[in-house]
Image (cartoon, rainbow, N blue to C red; front, top):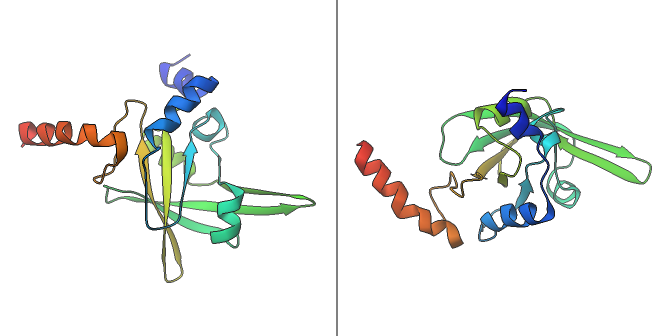
Length: 161
């Protein structure tokens, strides 16, 4: 089996989940957001990411296309947001287009993403802050423990300039 497939299929223990979520613990935004720990079904087989129902119920009224944008990037991805109501339950998820986002941003099991809702006229846009397993976020505004990485990023930019 290819190394990438093994990494995308691995399962996380309770301790690993807790450590992964700690990377995003200090994340704050003035806009509504939700945080998701990447699971095997989100970044591997199936490529569907569950959107937390309480967030979806409050901010996303129906199935529609949404735009994902990595916070410090210029590229965007169109993703289908699917909302299905069943007797006594609901299913809310990112579907078609999600796989391209996962692959283009090298998301793996254990990475954590914060999805910040930025509504525009007729468009639902999420700015996505990715906390990779190495502890470095893709956000130019780092909070909490992530501030420790800020000077390292500056050094790298100066060296490469």
